[in-house]
Amino acid sequence: MMIPMSIKVCVALMSLIACADSVHYQPTWESLDSRPLPAWYDQSKIGIFIHWGVFSVPSYGSEWFWWYWQGSKPYPNYAQFVRDNYKPDWTYADFARDFTAEFYNPDQWAEIFKASGARYVVQVTKHHEGFTSWPSKYSWNWNAGSVGPHRDLVGELATAIRKKTSLHYGVYHSLFEWFNPLYLQDKANNFKTQEFVTTKTMPELYELVNRYEPDLIWSDGPMGAPDTYWQSKEFLTWLYNDSPVKDKVVVNDRWGNNTICRHGGFLTCTDRYNPKTLQKRKFEDALTIYGSSWGFVRNAQLSGYLPVETLITAIIQTVSCGGNVLINVGPTKEGTITPIYEERLRQMGSWLKVNGDAIYGTKPWRKQNDTTNSDVWYTTRSDAPHVVYAMSLKWPKGQLVLGAPMVNSQTSVTLLGYDKPFNWTAPASVGMVIDVPSLSVNDIPCLWAWVFELRNVF
Ligand SMILES: *[C@@H]1O[C@H](CO)[C@@H](O)[C@H](O)[C@H]1NC(C)=O
Ligand SMILES: *[C@@H]1O[C@H](CO)[C@@H](O)[C@H](O)[C@H]1NC(C)=O
Ligand SMILES: *[C@@H]1O[C@H](CO)[C@@H](O)[C@H](O)[C@H]1NC(C)=O
Image (cartoon, rainbow, N blue to C red):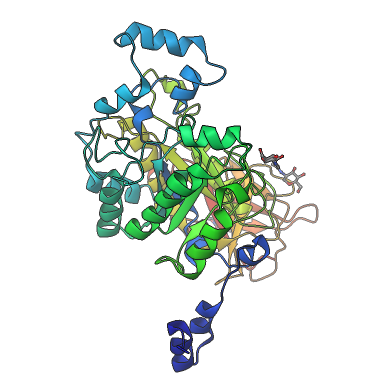
């Protein structure tokens, strides 16, 4: 009998860490859920989501354009939009030709994502429209290699991210497709047949993993069908035991209509999941910079874009409660990230440059938000448990009153990005009162949300 490689390595090194890869997962949720999340994911805290596909061509309404136009309960304004702007008998497939991507410069995207302070990227590689952004052999004539860009949008970004940055590269993939005839046929059979799963969605998922070796798989669109229909337990068993990414890959929870918010890797539960209380399991808050659409919208209004304060508030609240944040951009069909998205990302990066110690690699403290000051959220560090970060969404004029910290004679307070310590007192009625001097414009470390580093509070 051959000794498996991982056991040989393990014996040779006599190390528990090397032994860990001899764990063999079974296709049950009990077994799959027992896999620890690779540590990079929790440490990273912030990712960038990219919604870019054929829906970026009409760029009207949202990335659900096709469904709202021709799905079971169409919105009349979509048909009107097509009648007014395109030739008679226009079909959704006709949009693909105009997915030109002529300005797509993955190195430039990588530079912007790096500057945002994010530590991972999740690219939509196939949305519910079924178009694959890589030249998949399972998506005949409905992929970015054959129509539209005539490029491998996935491979190019994966390469640029890895070459230019230390960010992790991940993929979003929709299990179902609104109008795929094989899916509709399986659905008509109450999901007792699996033609679509075995010939389309699973083969392309294996192809994605083997070809691009993503660090993260963000599955979506299980719709009305359970994990058994999608064969997702079998896929994850392969992914965790035998795939080329088995040691580093992280997945979410959308693997069947019975798994969301329950099984898988990190939990996504709903879009924009920001529970504001400590969660038992790792979760992710996916939100989009343009409030009402994940895909680019040509007739967007400035007021529809979230102000950076809102993004930073989401980061602070989510990380305090143990989650990650996945912030979405919608590039144009030409392949540009428009300046308003870019500005938000660079603003976020400028804030993280000053305050990153309170975010990256942190863990929840014994309190998530302060007991008396509703503008203050906390994190701490496993490598320095005597350090607590009090992140204040408002600039505290004159003093910052906190209920949760317990002080002693060793307690000290600084502001991240400002080098002098602050005075504090501990009146009987509250935890502590920090004297906050008025700072000159040049001394203010950042423009939104200020982080007080408290040492030796408990
Ligand atoms: C999942 O989908 C199946 C098949 O359509 C259905 O019978 C079942 O009730 C659904 N389960 C949940 C939890 O929605
Ligand atoms: C913050 O903490 C208090 C209790 O200390 C709690 O009542 C409150 O609901 C929490 N959440 C928010 C969002 O303020
Ligand atoms: C701290 O208190 C001392 C004594 O009252 C005062 O001189 C000093 O300016 C204060 N420092 C700050 C940063 O407020």
